[in-house]
Amino acid sequence: MPFVLDNSVVSGWYLKNQATPYTAAIAERLLDDRAWAPAVWELELANVLRTACMRQRMVAQQAQQVLARIAQLPVDVDRQAVPPSELLALAIRFGLSSYDAAYLELALRRQLPLATQDDALRAAALASGVGCVEAS
Image 1 (cartoon, rainbow, N blue to C red):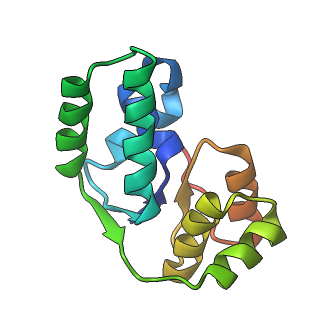
Image 2: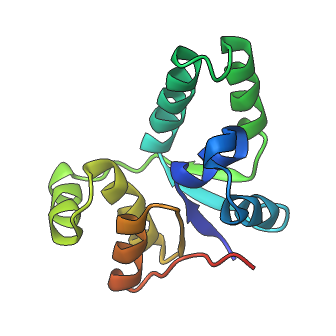
C-alpha cells in the first residue's frame, strides 16, 4: 500500500544520528511499496544535506550521492499546488509548521497513511484519520 513519506524518516537513511529501527523498516517497505511526498520534501532534503555538509557530517560529494540514490527510490513527488490558506488552516488546527502541514494535506488528499518520526505530525495524522505507517 502506498504511503506519504516525510523527511524525518528519509534523514535516518543517511545520517547515523537520525537512524532508528523505524527508518530502517520504512526503507525496507519501499522494496515493495511506493511512497508520495509533497514538493517541499525536495527542499527539506536539500536543506538537511546542506546542513550536514556545513556541520562536516558529510562532504558535498557524499550529499550529491545521497540525492542520486534517493532519486532512484519509488517516491513520487506530488506537484499539485495547494492553496496557502489550506496549509495554514491545517497548521493551526493541528499545531504544525506549514511544512509539516504539506505532508498532512497530501496524506489527506490521497487518503494514505503517513510515515513520520515527528511526534506532532504523527499525532495530527492519527487525529485526522489517515493514520501512520507502522514499523513491521
